[in-house]
Length: 216
Image 1 (cartoon, one colour):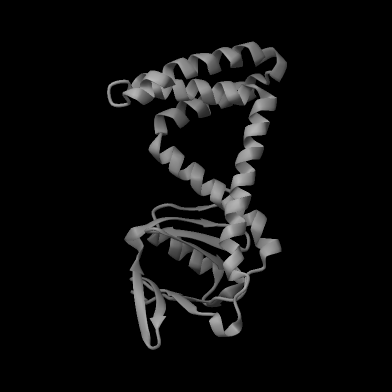
Image 2 (cartoon, helix red, strand yellow):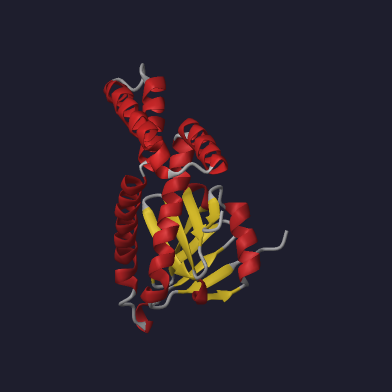
């Protein structure tokens, strides 16, 4: 089998261009993990959302029903949180009720979405802040090999991180959001100096279990 490798020479970040993309990537990663941890909740929520879109309900017509879902959801969630092991089913249906209720209340749902967006924006800004101050002498080279990510830890010494410790990778138009172990790394596509994007996309999809794009 051909030994594949892809090298990134890390350079200062283009914060203005990357910030909105990284914010969306962080949101995508959060949704990915939520769906994995609570598949039953998302399964029901997706079905309800699909039904609402098909019926084309107007927000005001479903406001009363949304409030009812929200109240019932809160009633079910409270005992479920107190004893989640024995009250798992009420807890799940309580979460579903709250999600459906909040989404049905258009203004409330938009306000919550705006708050979440601000949180993702703040996290994205923090991740990009340090790399924005990189100079040429600070820049390092990271290489994706068949075994894992190889990066320098000292002069002439390298460390390799295996792909089985990767939590997720989200690809955006100009960046890759990489989460592994307890670390978060953002790579600019412009920094790829060895290999091409199509081949690297295929490589990541083979190596990383949770590899998604913003369009997925």
